Amino acid sequence: MESSGGTPSCELTDKAKKYDRQLRLWGDHGQVALESGHVCLINASASGTETLKSLVLPGLGSVTIIDDTKVTPQDVGNNFFVESESVGSARGEVTLRLLLELNPEVRGTFVEQPLTEILDNQPDFFTPFSCVVATCLPECTLLTLSKVLWEAKIPLVVVRTYGMIGYLRVQMEEHTVVESHPDNEMPDLRLDRPFPALQKYIDGLDLDSMDHREHSHVPYVVILYKVRQRWIQEHGAAPASYKERKAFAEMVREGMRQKESGSGDTFEENFEEGIKAVNTALLPTTIPSGVQSILNEASSITPSPTTKPFWIMARALHEFITSEGRGALPVRGTIPDMTADSEKYIKVQNLYREQAAQDADWVLRRVQEHSQQLGPRKVISSLESSVKTFCKNAHALRVIKGKSIAEEYKGSINLSEIGSHLENPDSELVWYVMLRAVDQFQSEFRAYPGYFQDQVETDIVRLKVCVNKLLADWGCGPIIKDDFIHEMCRYGAAEVHSVAAYMGGCAAQEVIKVVTGQYVPVNHTHIYSAITATSATFSL
Image 1 (spheres, rainbow, N blue to C red):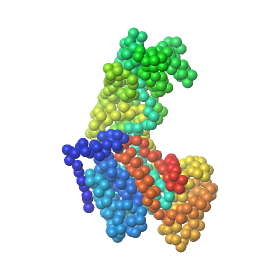
Image 2 (cartoon, rainbow, N blue to C red):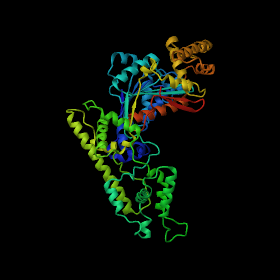
Image 3 (cartoon, helix red, strand yellow):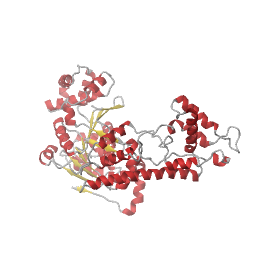
C-alpha cells in the first residue's frame, strides 16, 4: 500500500514560506537532500512514530514502516498516531495514514512482515534507504540488523524509551560532514598573511589624509592591518599575549578621531568595532588539528572509482595547501558586518569573495583532474557548487568513524570510559548499564523485568544477577545501587509518551543530520533521564 502527494512547481514560493525556519538552518540544498531521503522505521511504537512525526513535518521525501503487530489498548494509551477504533488493525498501516496527514508532500509505505523474515530472506531490502530507525527490538534481532546495515554501509539510529529513561544510539561506519556549522565561528580576515589584492588595496589607503567623514567610514579590517604593521615595526613581531593585545587596542584607540558634530565623548564607531575585534581578528591563520588529520589521511588515499567525493575533494584541498595556498586553507570569502561607507565595504567584501573564488577554482581543477583519471565513475553531482561549499567550510570539516552495535555488544567497548563514569553516582551512564542488563534479562527469560506484576519481586533478584554479571564481564565491581534495579522493574518496559516525544525529536534531529550531511551527529550513545531532566553523550 502506498500513499503519496506532490506540490506543483508553481507553488514553490508557498513551499519556501512553509519551510522558512528550517531553510535558515540547512539551506535550499539541505532541503533538497532531505526531500530526496528515504527513511525506514522498524516498529511504529510511541518512540518510532514521534521520530517519524519530526521527519514528516520538515518534508522528508519518503518513509517506510516495517511492523507486523496489531494495535493494542496499550498503544492507544501512549501513541498519538493510533485510535481506539483501530485496536486489532495493522499498527504500521494505521500510524502511516495518520502521519502522512501531517504533510501531503511526503510519500509512505508500510510492510506487514516480521523483521526476522526480512533479514533472513531479503538481505538487500534495506539498500534503498538513506537511514534506518529501529525501536523496540530484542537484543538478538538488533545485533543481526546492526551487522546487516553495517556491511551495507547504511546508517542506523536506535531510539528507545524505557519508562523514564531514553536511549539513542547512532551507528555509522564513516560519516563525513562538510557543513558542520560550528558555534562561535572566528572570521577569516588573513591580517597576518594578506593575499596580494587585499594588501595592495589597503596599502593604497592613507588614513591620515582622509577627511573626517572618510576616516570614520573605513572598514576596521583596514585599520587593524595598518596598526598591526606599525606594531611589528616597533616591536618586531605581532602581538601575541593578552598584555600585548591590550596595548595594541590602545594603539588603535590613539588613531581614533572625535566626530566633528559630536561632543568630546563621541568617537568613531569603526575604530570602536576594531578595538572589540582585536582578540579575534589578530588570531594567526592556522589549520585546525582535526582538519589537518583529515587532510593527512586524504593525502595517503589513492583515488578509485569507489572513493567518496569528500575524500577526492579533501585530497585536492591538501594539494592546494602545499602549493598555491602556501600552507593555508582557501579564503572563505565572507567578512563580518562593519561600519563603513557602501563603496569601501563592498570593495573589501569583493576582494575576499574574488580570492575565495580563485582558491576554489584551483581546487576544482584538481578535483576534475583526479576524476578524469579514474575512468568511468559516479559523477559528483553539482561539482562546482560542491567544491565551493567544501572550500568555504574547509576550516570545519568533520569525519566521524563509528563502531557497530554488534561489535560493542560483543565486548569491544571503552571500559575505562565506563569505569570512570560509574564512579560518579550521578552519571547517566548507569542507565546504559541497566538497559544492557534488561536486554540480557529479556534474552534469558523471554520477558522484561516487572512486565508481569505478580513476578516483580522475583524479577528484582534476577535483574540484579544480570547487572552484576554484566559488570563482572567489564571488570567492574557490583557498584550499581539497588534503587536503580527497583526502578527498572517498576517500569516493566513501558513507554511513557512524554519521554517518547522527547526522544523521538532527538532521533529525528540525528536522522536529519545524516540525510542532509550537515551538522555533527551524536558520536555513539546518548542517554536521557526524565527523572532528573539531564542527558549525556558517551563514546563507548
